[in-house]
Length: 218
Image 1 (tube, rainbow, N blue to C red):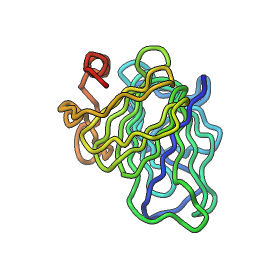
Image 2: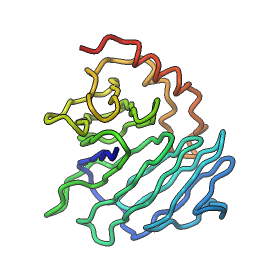
Image 3: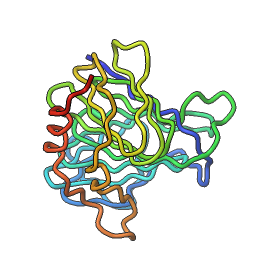
Image 4: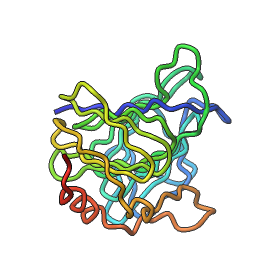
């Protein structure tokens, strides 16, 4: 089952470059099948990044985007923009990621700034910061720290708006749950700046996901 998470984000460009850059690593982080990814290393279109157990990596991408990839995750850089009006395209194949995008206006002819693909849902972001993770099987759950995210499963015609502090579950790419305020979204470690303190997220993703499933979504 193939899913698209579409992030339509409005922000300005402070820095533009064709490649991304690694700004932090912890534990085992690989690029490709075996090469170790190191701090300050450049990343480009086509790169496949994998994190090991208790590991993480923070990537600075073109157009001011930042990605923090959690433990036991796999991310493929499908496309990095060569022009200011082009779109960043990423595939999250496994695990979890924090995504942050600068605010600002879309360039002429630009429909979105960043597209994140998974197996189960489409999310159009109208804000700057959210978290997405695989749950059980093809389930995807996400929550918003800032702004609004429009979520639509593969079989839905209308999007569901998820606001700041809320979370949802997309079950097998078929149905998006009703957004609910979730206190633990604030407890997630949203920090992506190594100079601002610890980057490790200590909230149990498994427990948080179970909490979402246990709620009554009409």
